[in-house]
Structures are given as structure tokens and as C-alpha cells.
Length: 459
Image (cartoon, rainbow, N blue to C red; front, side, top):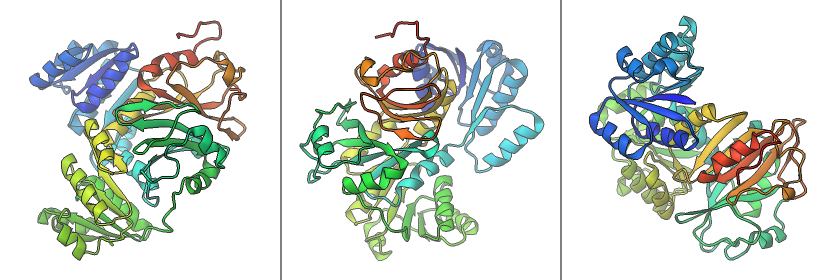
């Protein structure tokens, strides 16, 4: 596929790298010369220097022949204008734009009314809020991802040195009475990612991901010693930017008592006009004495949501030491994710990674329902619809030789039931299949899953 990406920032480069590895032809338009030089050094893509709002530049980049246009510059108006130009000047089947303004819903409506077809308008802050909310009531759980329209849940957790699973194999853990419809799908161990088998041991410091049927989610949490908070009562938010305001609004609707800390006095006045129940504090929300005076001990959650990754990490570590039950840090630089785990910050939110996932969902071949990246993009969860001609359909899983680093985590049948498969399980046409795989395995696995039965598997 010929794909034109406008903007050369981290989202663009991450998306381009993935698309290139999967055999797509990628062209990137970026205005900054230094950034263009870096992209040329790191990516096997055509780099065109110029403005994405220029028709001439987009013609030079080959917009007329592009099959997909992805507009992710730092300017919302440029991204929308790029899609308008693509609508008039190209036959692109898919157009994607990132829009970060809080007026995103108005822009969706306006584009629809005037006939500018943008297949996906991504609002990163909304994606981040969606990922954050489910984990707030559950200390110890880093993230919760849903598949198959909510019928399957995947959750992550840190293994502390005193956790009862330390030193046990997955088989031994299962023998301790694990709910039958559950499976450890991935283990992050330092810089290593493991797609485990039954003989794999759990070690202190591991970050594991468990997949289960939604109706047994609470049973699996109890088995692993995780307790939900009965309800969210008090939450502190650091940072008064768009995402902090959006989270506060969502929590207000749930009847949660919220305090939002922001250093800028002018910004505080504006926030106070927007929020109805939240207490807006014009102060440094990373000051330990201030937080103690504001009664931080025992709060349900502390959310560090500034635009500064380092400040968020420091604030989350402090809040954890001050006995906040749950801490969340907003992280944009993927290289910081492993550091956050080492610092004991269980939950991190990355709007950039969420944006990349949403884009890849639109680009991937065949019936791809969802894509979720983990760690520094070292592993993925992919939800696919099984076609009748797939070579995997009709066979028992134990008869299929999956490549090392890949596993079927769950199968959701068209009739509604969900199975966490074992070796005797089969895949039927139309099933939603959730696969977990190391990043380098994904292209081959996906191609094989969607191939015709007569084709030889590529491993």
C-alpha cells in the first residue's frame, strides 16, 4: 500500500516504522529540515521537506497516487486541510487526521456537513481518558484492554517480591485453583518480552498480562490477590491541561471528589469556570508538604497529567510514597515506560501510543478489529476475524505450528460464547481471534492468518 504521512514527529515516525516493516511504501512530508534529516537516517521512506498545507508540496509527495493519507502534524488546522486537499486531489481510500483541540466533536460534525470525508479523526486525549478510567478503582492493575465488544478482558499487573506466585510455573499456578478461563498471555521481564508456555516461572519484578472472559474478571483478580476499591471517593489531579480537565469532568459525573493542582493562576481561573465541582488549587502539586496538608494519604488515585514526562514520573513516585492507593503517570516518550515500571509506577498512559494503535487498526490487512501495542512496541495484541479460507480454520490449535513468540489468547464465537483456548480448541469461520505476539512476528502471523488455505505458512 502507498501511504502518505504528513508530519514527522514521534507518532509519524513510529507509525511509519511499523508500516514499512509490513511492506508498505511510505512517504513523509515534514517542514523542519533537521527532523527530515533524522527521518532519512532512521526510516526506509521517501522524505519530502515542505508544508503539509501546500498543494504543490503534496503533489511532489505523490498525493494523487496515495491509497491512504495520515495527517499527524502538530497543527490541527494543517491536518484538516491536508485531508481536504486529499479529498479533492487524490483517490485515497482512507484518510486519517489527528485533532487535539477540545472542539473535536464540532470538527467531526462540520466535516460531515460539508462533505469532507475523513474516515478517522483521532483525539489523543480522549483515547487516553478512555484507557485510564477502567483501572482507577483497581490498585495493582496497570491497564485493562477489552476485546470482542467487551466479552474478553486483558489486564496487566506488577509482581511484587512478596507475591504468592513468585517462583511458581504457570502450570503450578493453574494447579492452585486458577479460574479455568484465564491465561497469562505475556510477561515483561526487564528488557525481555516473553510469550510464555506452561513451564515458564513467574519472577519478582515481572509485569504480566492476563486474559480472561469478562464474566470471570473479578474471579481472576481475587485469585491473584487484587482487590477493587469499593468506590472512588477522592482523586488528586496534577496538571490543568485538556486531559486533566477531561478526566476531572468524567470523575465529577461519577460523584468523585476531585482536587486539581495547577501552578498557572490564569489557567486556574479558566479551569474553575469549566469545572463544576472540582476544587482547583493554584499550587505545586509535587510539593510533599502541600500534598500532606491537602490530606493525600489514602486517596483513591493520584493522576500526574502534565505535559512534562519527567515531572509526571517524579510526582507519581512521590504520591506512591505518600500512600496514594493508585498512581497514574502520563508518558509520551516510550523510552520512559520501562523506567516507570522500575520506579514502581504501575499505570502509565501514552496518548501517542494510543494514537499509533488506532492508526494501525485502519491500515492492517484483512479483517483487523483492533491493535494494541505494549511496552516500547515490543509486543502486540491483535483482534482478527477468521475468514472461511484461513489455513487456521477447522484445525485444532495443537495441530497448528505457530511461530515462536505467538499465542492465541482468546476466541469469541459468533454465537456469543468465549473460550480461552487450549490445545484441543478450534477456530471457526467468523470467530474473533485475539492473538498475542512479539512485534517482529506480527507481520508473518497476520499474513498467515488471513492467507488462503492453499498457501504455505511463512515459517
